[in-house]
Every structure is written in C-alpha cells, then in structure tokens.
Image (spheres, helix red, strand yellow):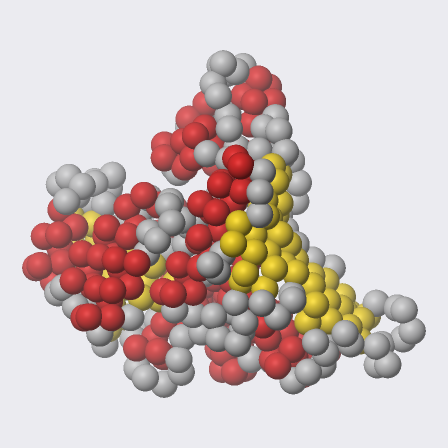
Amino acid sequence: MIKTAFIGVGYRGKQLLKLLQHLPAFRVVAFADPGVENSDMPGVFCYNRGEDDYLNMLEEHTPDLVFVASPWQCHVQHALQCVARGCHVALEIKGGLYLEEYQPLIQVAEQQGCHVYPLENTLFMRENLSLYNLIKAGVMGDIVYMRGGYRHDLRHLLLDDVGHIGNRRKTESVWRSKFYQEENGDLYPTHGLAPLCMMIGINRKDRIKYLTSSASKPAGMLQRIKDLGGNTDVEIKMGDVVVTQLETENGVLISLTHDTTLPRPRSLDFEIQGTKGIWQGDRRMIYIEGVSPDETWEPDEAYVERYEHPYWQKWGEEALQIDTHHKGMDYIMLKAVETDLKDEIPYPATIQDLALWTSVTPLSKISIAERRTINVIE
C-alpha cells in the first residue's frame, strides 16, 4: 500500500484524486489546499490553514508519495519540501519559470534517493506509446522531422472571472492568466514535446542543440474580453501563436506550437516523418513506403495494435472504462507510477527530462525578445 497525499486539489488535483480511488495500491491519507473548506472523503484529512499548512501534513502523515498539483509557481518549492522529508513526488506539468529552476530539486531528490515522476499524460497516450515501439522497430526508418504542440482554446479557463460562464467558481484564471499578461513564449511545451523526446531518445541517445522561437501578435484574448464587455485596457503580452523550432545533435528538426487563445478544436498536432514513412496523429493516418498503397494514407489502427505497448496490453481496457476524461492516458500514467514504485516497470521519464522539456519556456522567451537562435547545449 502506497501512503499518498496531495498538495493542491484544484481542477487537475481533483481529477487525479478521483482516479486514485480506482487504484487500491494507493491509500490517500490527506491533502493540503488553502482554497478548500474541508474534506468530503472519509478518513482523508484536509489541511487548509494557510499556504504552509502542507508542511504540517507532511510531518504528521509521513506519506510515501505526494502528488503536487499546486499553482505553477509553487511546484518546485512544494516538491523540494517533500523530497527533503524522504517522500517520492508525482509532479504535475507546466512550463519552466526560469532557467535551472529544477536543479535544486534534482540535487535533493538524488541525495534523498527519492523519485520525482513528471505527470505528463501525453506520454501515455495509446498511439504515442505504439509509435514509440514502431519507431524503435525501424518501421519509419531514420526520423528526420517531428511536430507537436499545445493547441487548445483556453479562453474560457483564463477569463472565467469575467463572468461569461455564469456562476461557475473561479478556477485557474486567478493565477494562470497572469502569465499571459506578463510573458511571451511557449508557456506549456511539454504536452507536445515530451512524447517526441521519448520516441527519439532525447537525453539518452540524442540531445536538443538549438532553439528558435517566434510569436504572433496578441489579439485573441483581447477580442474575447471585448465580446464579453470587459476592460480591454488590460495588457496581454503572450502572442496567440508561438512557434518554436528545435534542432537535435543528430539532425532531427522538431516544431512546437503553443496556441491557446484563438478559437479552434483541441489538437496536439503530432506528426512524425522518417526515411520510410510518416504519421499524422490528429488524422490518425499513416503512410509507410512499400507497405501502404502508393502515395495513399491509411488508418493507423492496425499499426497501433501491432505495436501496442505493454502498458495498454495490461491496463488498456480498464483505463478506457475508468478514465473517460482523458481517454485512458491518466489512468495508465498512474499505473506507471505504481509499477515503478513497486520496482516492476521503470517509469519512462525522469526529473531531468522534465527540466529539459520545461526549459523551452524561458529559452523561447529569450529567443522571441532578442530575435535570435539559442544554443541549448553550450
């Protein structure tokens, strides 16, 4: 039994907490969040007496594992306090606030022998894991180009304090929208970047060498505020579309797009192209030279099934039944944390990976501001 606690039970924390109720290996004993009045879960203690009450939770319950799902600016400090006390950490995802942000956490976790699990759920998408196996088997040949992104209209979340969604309680807008007012860069690179790094072995057999970012003008948020009758004098610095080009030592080009303030259907914008074929994630289509009909796309399902990852072979059916919100990938992710803690199956990402993925945020801000290419590896 894994004694488990939470720091932060807002939108994301509640999702994970709900899923853990279906995983008997985890026993949730407490959570800390100054914005929550009480616990409606029998036997689960609530720590809500100020921003530092989570420290009392850690001392009194000595959890084995702590899920950190607090606001972005608190992540590293909260995780540091956990690993300093010998707790493993399951760390929610964000962009980096500044360069070398995760280095203190990496050092203390190593000293304490603690695991820090990056909770990047796109790593655990069924098709992404199958493509990882397919690429490893050489089906797509030598990978040359990859594309991904965070293309998700978040205006309702960022502006819910304007009142356009009725009586809904304020959520992440109280802290998340401030980043859009003050910064211009790729705020959330990990959803698109993490699976691509996994597929080609970034931090294992290849490294990201150069980064160049560009940003469009900021118009989408201001237009929505105007449509809602709000104050359009507010300053928005974040470009509606931020495009980042990454080049690896092995010559792979990776394109990332951050696009969260314009109307569009949700998309992770995945595409992978190699010397033997190409895959498009949104369309779920694939073309393998000499196998697919000449210059004709075919559905990727047969390939996804043929190269199905052991995670999905073992837990896919229950994941789809239980985790309807994210099509099973959150459930698979939590099972991956469980099996790593039990020394059964290694988790596919490390805190060093998270540090690299999130470094795209501060580096993209520098690249945009100074209009130049950044050397990621000096």
